Length: 552
Image (cartoon, rainbow, N blue to C red; front, side, top):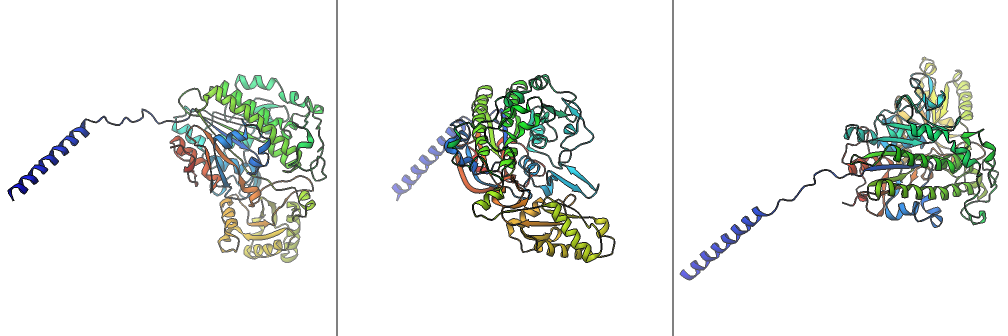
């Protein structure tokens, strides 16, 4: 018994000794070093390809170079199922959503333009009569600012997080493609003035353009590209992913080669509808990086670039045209040069880049019908006219409808609120009338959308696109591949996947290679950037970070 007690006592001493030794060892272990500062990329570059449907990443994949789209896909992380969560799917809404992480219901940009029921005037998304053109002759093209955007952007949050030391610059052929992404507190936003061929800004940002912009404008580079004309990059018979060169349902002058030399010194605006419009945009972006020392210190800068020529070409010729294919093949080469420039100027691994689109595009109805597929067009003017005639006959009140736009009916409230007839009765009668029109799938009272039998995805997108102070009274849903347009070309704006399924690829600092097929939304881009940069989300954000992209 004594032996057992002695053994237990000895074991306890050994245990105490070991524990004491371990405690001593732990207390003398070196403390883990914390990073001296939060790691961030030197530069973030946002690339929005206007009207780029998701499938364009792969439609022309075999013809892309290794350094452009292929580099993005294979070195970066592709979020394959990214959708726009609102409707209508237009340019201004898309650019705003990408950078605010919000929807029109919150950020207020409900279309490229809209009718303001308070002022009873049409409003263009970036118009601002309180500012003037800077960088060229005065014109309405320069009376622009972000004042109509009600929330801030990820670029604004970067400015706030760096105490306004991080630079933010927006560049696009379109004012809305430059101004809205750059945000309220940007150092600069530049857009193209078609009447002069100059890159301009407004007094909202500065009193005069910097020397590098002024010198660039003197070159009139549009003339250089006009002199080349527009021929296909490769032999035209190799464009097997496209229709024949000449189609009646394409825009005018749809035969290669496109004679552009007729525009030298006469029509600087014409470059928008050629792939060269993207080239001069990315050239200016490179010049901005060099001239403004973007990405040269440890304070993160942000360059927001929108390539808009794809949209102009797409509208004119359609997604199945040789013009569209050639534009993407040329953009691929432009991207290769741009990425190589970033590698050299900022340093590979020092920048984060993302590519996405503001919306997709529908097939040209003529193309669809040619291939026995359903499609068609409606006219806003005819919709308003027919509905007014019906309401006048039924209620004996003239011109109750002010506008049909953005898939919405806007009534004259001075006439609907006069007590002659209930506004609910007017809306109910209008809805039943619209449902009977060719190409119409449904129509709903937006204020009572929760009571409708719409598909949940449609209901959600209409709700997200509805701003109580700026939107109309009735929303109508068209049949698939029907839209407001004419007999040639195409457009976008509806809830359908061809308009709402967009590419989203991240590459560079902090990004691991890979892909996900999990569903994400355009609203997730800004909070993802916020998480990557360790800064606050934009103040109207409704999205969530895409956690799959990070290398940590």
